[in-house]
Amino acid sequence: MANILEVKHLNKSFGRKPVLHDISFTVQKGRIVGLVGPNGAGKSTIMKTVLGLTDFSNGEILVEGQTVTATKHTSLAYVGALIEYPGIYPFMSGLDHLKLFATGDDQNQRIDEVVTELRMTKYIKRKAKSYSLGMKQKLGIALALVNHPNFVVLDEPMNGLDPESNKDLRNIITNLAKKGTTILISSHILSELEKLVNDVLVIDKGRIVSQSSMRNLMNRGKKYLVIKSADDAKAKNLLMAAGYELADGDDVRILETDAQKLMPILKIYVENDIEILDIQHQQSDLETSLLTLLANDQVTE
Amino acid sequence: MLTLIHQETFKLMHKKSTYFVSLFLAGMIILFGVLAKLYPNSFDPKSMFNINFTGIEWITFLMIAASASIVAMEFQYGTVKELLYRKYNRGQVLVSKWIVTFIYSLYMYVLALVLTLVLKVVLFNHTFELGKLSGSHTVIENLLISMGSQFIGLWLVLSLVLLLATMFKSSTVAVSAGFIGYFAANIAASLMFGLIGKWEWLKWNPLNMLSLSTQVMTPSYREFTKLTVDQLVMGNLGYIVVFLFLGYLIFKKRNV
Image 1: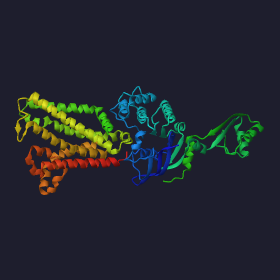
Image 2: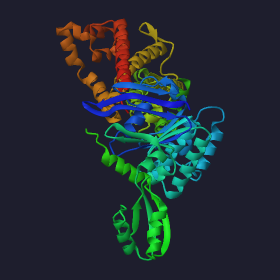
Image 3: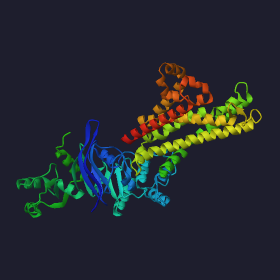
Image 4: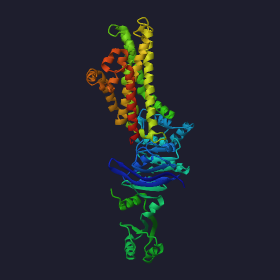
């Protein structure tokens, strides 16, 4: 599938301090790509550079095949973005903000749509200075989406959102992706990202640590077979004696390996007359996978 | 570009201060008009008419604040990101702000002119005549020439304020520098003329350019400025271009 964004060998420094080291990645059209990493890893800087908001030392950024620099960004015509925190004029209402940036003939219809989708109708006509953090955040998201962009860049869009709004946002993003919109999104709330993204880019200390599909990243983490029984303590001893590797803790969690078969394990239970109550596969979540990845990351500053 | 100008106008029209400023300006002009009517010995009607009943002076202060805010508010509210990630290049964004500032200043001058003429007709219809020669020009011509030269001077100050607002991302710094610069020009004039007398090349300094409006009305001022009116006009325009261009260079390089 064609790439909507290509970043090639991007380097950037703040003064003498290098912040981005040889960053290269691509974003395919129609994918939801998560950008994750610790604080100060360079997520916002990458997003700002892609949007032409900040310059870079060397490298190349292509959006829809056209070069983007801080001074040249005609290819950003169909891009919508929310970076860091929403920029809001306190003296204008939310509706005025949307009118200010909405383009095209059907702008009123598009404004109505996005306001309804994000459930902002109640306060959209109020001056933005009276908005709560979450309301401002939603307005920022609405501004990014109102012109139906092909490519949406969202930096920490879940900041300050309540659970219901989080779910709304997730639905909106999923629906946009179904219609072919590409989304680059960063968030600290990994449990939310996990439900959303197709691909994950992991950044640490200004370098790309991993670019893979969500599924591959999850598979990289440890998988366990969790067996609940009438006598876990006994089962544990027997399993260890049989050479199985178990996770720490009182419950029985057997580390899964590729060649492992279920039958011999069950046999141990049956032969020793231990009643099995429940069997589950436990896969690591995004958070665990990410922490493992970052812990193994040998990148030095 | 038209979209950007429309956006800037939209923002300006949604600020309460925009309306307050017009009312304030009109109020001050009318106030001094009435004072000139009531106390003609203290406030000579014809002199007051020549200075738009103090209107132009107020416009300078109001426009310093307005122009600084048009640029600096984007940094203050974090909205500069909203403006810059779109398809327009940075030059277009900044120029749209200059254009709207220019239109705004023009609007204030027109407002001051209209009110001055209305006050003349309403309050001083028989005190003096607009068409009467005063020197080589009629009273109305003098008013227009004076306003034109002050408009150029205003833009010298505004181009500096716009530069400082871009440089420091803060309207406070830009407004303070604008006010101080403007007052300093009046206060330090005699000192400056002394220095120009000593080293003539100093006549090209930007503060001397602010003497344009005085010299237009009082040609003998040339003795101090050592420049002709034409040279002063060219000097003003030159500095305006330089200040605006420096502002553009800074804005182009600014990381947001």
